[in-house]
Amino acid sequence: MKNHIIISKIIKPFKKKIGVDGDKSISIRCVLMASQAIGTSKIYNLLDSEDVNNSLVAIKKLGINYKKFDNYHKIFGLGINGYDQNKSVKIYAGNSGTLARLILGLLVNTKKKIIITGDNSLSKRDFSRVTEPLKGFGASIISKNNSLPVQILGSEFLRPINYIEKRGSAQCKSSIMLASLKTSGTTFIKAKKSRNHTELLFKYLKIPIIVSSRKKYDLIKIKGPSNFKGFEYKVPGDMSSCSFFIVLALLSKNSEILIKNININETRTGIIKILNKMNAKILFKNKKKYKGELIGDILVKSKENLRGIVCPKKYNSSAIDEFLIIFLVAAKAKGVSSFKNLEELNKKESPRLEIALKFLDMIGIKYLRYKNDIKIYGNPNLNLSGNYIIKNFRKDHRVFMMSCIAALTFGGKWKIHDKDSINSSFPNFLHKIQELGAKIN
Image (cartoon, rainbow, N blue to C red):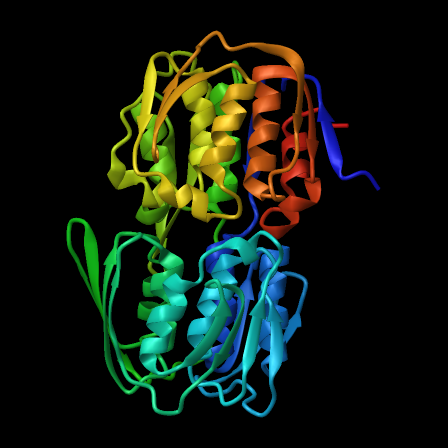
């Protein structure tokens, strides 16, 4: 079966209501937290993707059973010391940095050696940012070149740590938080602002946590050891998946879309703030709180007079997974768009900043780069007619989806390889854009 698609026509005007799949970040956290709960948890709308399914396989290897039903999963937790301590296992995290880094935090007290592996892309990413602080708890961790595979052997004499997270990485922060569940005493974390799904889950589950918010960072205190009971949770739609449809509607003439039941947590809506500063008019509808998370519908209408932006650095962490698709808007906007301190883009599934610049070169958009800062010189009249091939991008799902949106809005004939990359986060992506009228071969 071929593993590429052809797009040779821009999408026709549309006016639709859609939903997107469950939030990946929350899905993985729910699986891991349920595996540590005492009793049965029921999780609805769990994302059915490779990353989440690898999380389920991982807890199964560690002795935690689960059962899948039509619209929910049951996970039978055995408490914070419930993982099988009597055998060494190898856990495959696939492409998921969230799974690999967070589960390391839960293994700081394992009595047998556990090995974490991943695919080629994940195995090139830096793991010292979690392995070094986890060693501070007392765990023994071995890795070559600070990358996967990582071997961890826990300690029964864990000690709390003081940790400063400087990158704005929710994965690193969450790994330390999960390790603190198993540690006697209080762990202190000073963390640069980033996604706070783990903090909200801790609060919902009545785990002893205090979060003090400052302008640029949060102070987090967690007292352990902390057991908690099984829970029910309905996973909302994923903002990162939603972002592709936001930009598709924004750049398509005479189009409008309402995307239902999306996680609009403040730490995830950087893309909305950035695009609205570029003269989009994206609105939230039917907002409500659900177990700490803010949920709502997103209304987007097409916009022709988009303008460049000097993007505030404060939005970087809350839009880190969406910058590729934001760059498409900058390419079509009038004027210059400036983005700074994007070094974390090259620490993702692929070197996304490097790939983005090659992409801009390919479609004829001028830019200037200085280290990790870029300026994009937009062309409101951008209208492509050539042939474009997208390949060799380390099977990064967001590069694939961004390329599809470019093909559907900029024109030209596109051959986009590695369509199976979307299985890690959004297997229904192609089906969803076809629902909107996209022609794909």
